[in-house]
Length: 207
Image 1: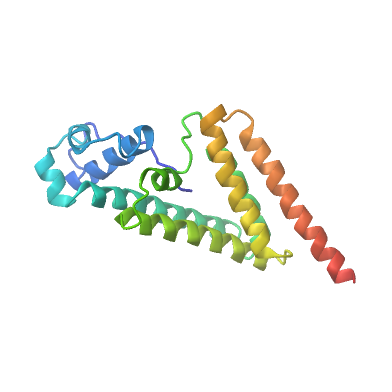
Image 2: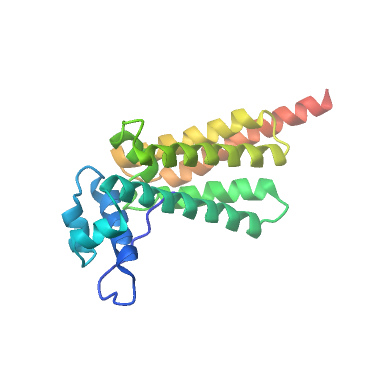
């Protein structure tokens, strides 16, 4: 969730210019950073020109916001797939999410959460991308709270925050020292957190 999928725009006559531009921008922004990539580079990679780019996106800021909005929508679809795969079993959904995140972190080309990266690069509070980033992170935390609550775990908000912050930290660590072993550790630590909250709930029910 929140990971850029690599998609080539080469030999893509059947792909619309807008889609080619967004696809090229997504890959370039994630690999090189938003500030480091200019519209000329994006247009060239998308096999188009600046005039066409600005016809579909009025500014680079708007293109950045659309890039992040697409990632947010992909993340929501991933949550929906987990819910469908483990219908009626929030505990299984939570653990499946943990494993999915571990698989992403373990990728060699992992550069962290693109929305978190964008937040670092775009400190201006009025940047259109900031609203997308804040809405996405808030929704991710709320989804975790809902799952923890539905799974009858103690202090669901606290557990959701623990899991949320664990993932954020692991993704930063992957960028600084590499992803080796991080996926496995993410699962073990996440499972330990879930187990600790399960024990608390069990003890309270006994008392």
